[in-house]
Length: 320
Image (tube, rainbow, N blue to C red; front, side):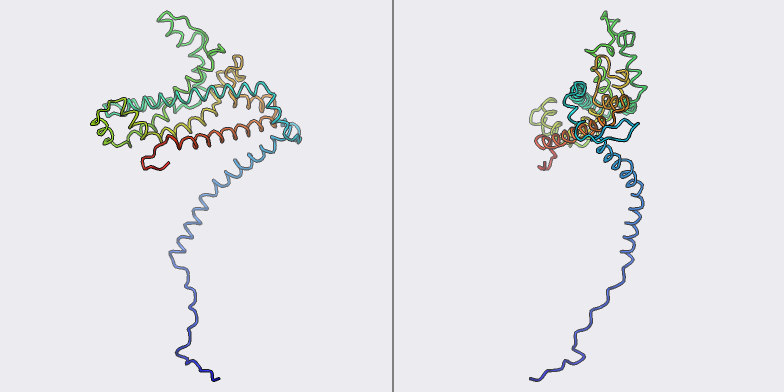
């Protein structure tokens, strides 16, 4: 058998060398490196200020620690202790009452005011800024002190009631009404969800209202069948944020309750009781366990809200 020699001009050429990186690739790498450099402070903060302290608090939740001696490992004793702690159960109940009452009322007032302000009138910007102002104060100590004085025995609220012949009381000193003053304070700070509702109302097409009016719908029917469905994503967004904020309330309850949940524990929110255990009694292990139970509870609540939200949130494109 004779082998045929392939002519040199028909031989398979060697694979070409890989081309040098283009200027575009180099530019992309430089942009990526610049992005990582700018993210470095955030990553350091995330790891050093958030992640490591959280993991350390998880460790402390299984220990007995009073800041004066090294932590002593006790297993799940702190979590078992919560089940038999009457103050813990009371704080959970007060927090549920506060959040489940104040958040729906706050969102209702915010939506109602947003509907009133969703009209182009002279000076409407001034009223929007004026109604948003209480939210800028947030949960400040000064605002809580003013609120405490306003609903005291000689406060402005009782003076107003006296003008119409109604005898007032020490609203913040009465166990039956102290918590409701906190609820009223939370509802009064409706500015942030109001602004978000205003933005959502601006995005609803006017053609939908015109079609509803042509079909004979009045203002109430147009509100139920046009405004609410189209505004449901914004309502859901506000509901999630305000519910989480409601469970995290601390400053106003601490100030109005004189730092111990008074009167008679009626203002003993979960966060206040956690603070008292950790910094009042130096029971850092127990307080850390409470913090992790709180984190898990808020996380589960958020999951429930997102799960149930699929049944009533309308995004306008058929997707849920």
